[in-house]
Structures are given as structure tokens and as C-alpha cells.
Image 1 (tube, helix red, strand yellow):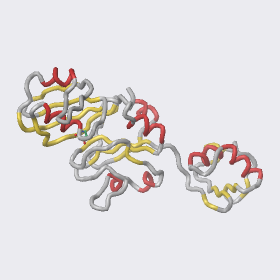
Image 2 (spheres, rainbow, N blue to C red; image 1 turned 180 degrees about the vertical axis):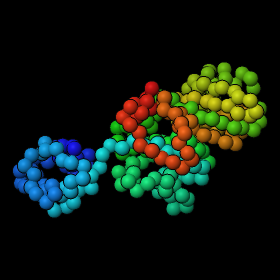
Image 3 (tube, rainbow, N blue to C red; image 1 turned 60 degrees about the horizontal axis):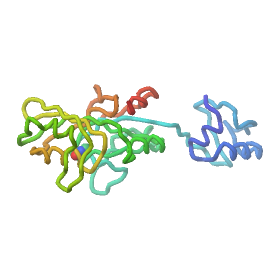
Image 4 (cartoon, helix red, strand yellow; image 1 turned 135 degrees about the horizontal axis):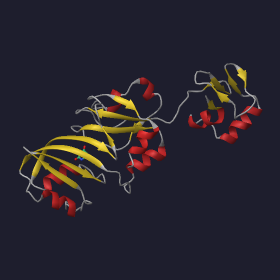
Length: 231
Ligand code: URA
């Protein structure tokens, strides 16, 4: 059950004040009958119409996908399949969009939402949300690569990265945590350190891990899990 005025504002139909006006004019019908208060609690399966037009109900939605390699992070691309192709209809109908980008050949954790404020918090250049990546690379990273990443790597074009946490693993593998999102940032950081990325997967955003979500799978986050994005 949700308040009528909240449903209509979330669906982008009208403000709470306009809702009251429409209620007074008897223009809002719920299951075919005029409603008498904009504060009325409406059940989830009730059919609402405003001035004769059916309302497509929308609610705040935050989802995560384990993105497959080969998909472009875009809502529309005439040349290539996009991440939207892996969203089920019930999520597409809530008008969720990707919060940030992963390259076409990158796999892993991608957030989708229809909440503009949340989207901005995640992708704003000022956002300091931590993102962790698992990397496989060719070439050799020097043993002091973690210290260099901590101090702030300078990329080929002169941009200086914020301090990052790099952990070298056995056999041409490492992980890195960054707190910004420049174009191809991780690949360019590894290049600056003497390697070449051959595989990249985002494994964590904030305190939210990809867990056992299978490649190509999507699921909705709870309020609590959404908060974890910012821890
Ligand atoms: N950094 C990259 O280089 N590519 C990605 O997809 C994400 C981060």
C-alpha cells in the first residue's frame, strides 16, 4: 500500500499539490471510482487513471548486474548489444539506467537505478565511492607498484590519479581499489605501471560485493544493500 500522491509523483505524473487539485476535480479514479483524498493508501494491484489516462506505476528501484563482456554500457547503441538487453521487462519498465560505465570488454558489478539523486551520488566527479577491480595483465609490474599506486599514478596524458590500493597477486594478476572514474582508468593505470590489461572485472562498489551473482544476472538491491554502496 502506498499514498496516492506519492505514487503519482514517483510516476512523474504530478506533484503532491497538483494531485490534491486533481482529486478535488474528481479526475483521479482508482479501480474505476473517484478517489476522495490524495493521502489515500492505494494497494499495489489497484488500477489508477488520471483524467482518463492509465497510470504506469513506478517506484524507486536499484539493481545490480554482473555485466557480461561484449555488452556496451549504454541505453541505446545501433552497432552493438547493450547492457539493457540483459534487463528483464519488469526492470526496464521502471526506467532504470546504468550508473556509470564499464568498457565493452570489462565484466562485473554495474548498478542501475531510476533514482536521479542516487545516480548523481554514484557518478558525480566528486563522488569518492570505492570501486574494486580484479585484473589479469601481460608484462611485468615492478614490486613497488603498490607504493606508486598509493602515491598517485601519473597517466600518459599527464592526469594524476588519486591514491589507489593495489595488491599484487601471483602470476600476472592483481586487484586495485580506486575512488574516481576517469576514462579507461584502470587500464591506463596498469599501462603506466608497465603492464597491459588482458582481463578486467569490477568486484565491489563501496562495501557491496558482486557475491555469487552469475555472469549476465541482475537482481534488485534492498535499502540496506543500497546504503552499502556508500560505505
Ligand atoms: N577502468 C577501465 O579501464 N575500464 C573499465 O571498464 C572500468 C574501469
